[in-house]
Image (tube, rainbow, N blue to C red):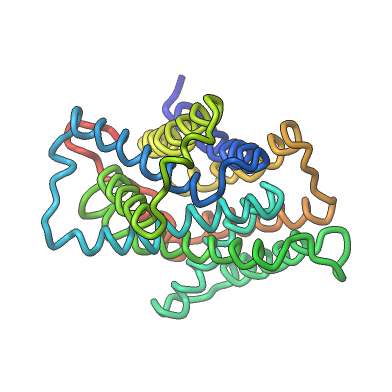
Length: 313
């Protein structure tokens, strides 16, 4: 098996796991015992602990940071990881899984706007076309079968758009950490501070855990491991075989997998108009990824992880 094929398999697997995670979360929400906030708290806490323990055993040096770096990780953890996870999962609870994923996929377009407005980078026809497609795709997804109707609640719309903005912030702000500390270190501390934030703002009660079934607990473990740690690991490993541009394009399988699994497991469907909107958003991401290197630097820089000493990830 050649290196490129290995990379494609790794990235496809990662994107599939991320896509399936939204369906798993919606399944839990339908049971009414688990709220979006509770799932965010559990997901961030378990992921941070498990990943932290793994790095402590395998690469302890990767967890060493200066006290002066804590402020950076706190900002990234709160306004990046914590807010991204909550707004995304809240949107999943308010709308179809595929709609929630496609809305968050607007984040590359937001990154492109930021690069043009604040970094004085050229708009170019690539970005102009991508932004037009992203905007048009969003309108089609949100209006369902007719332009006179909206298929998502006001709260769901606000949280969905917020998830895209917070994801864009995480993408941009994580660049510094990924370059200085490495991808795994940045991910671990952002998860940790994100978990600490939600546990501090809304401390869970012990009675709350008594309402969860054994099945719920297994799903929590699944989301922490197979929707967070494993896909990130596969994605970072895939980047050692593939150029970041190809990785970004391949990862657009995520919303497709989300739509398929939501249909098969939850019976959720999308109108033809919404499917077209999703295709337009995916096309926008692909255009941004295949543009000139200088035009997609914000996306590629955050995607390329630094190696942890002795590791290929």
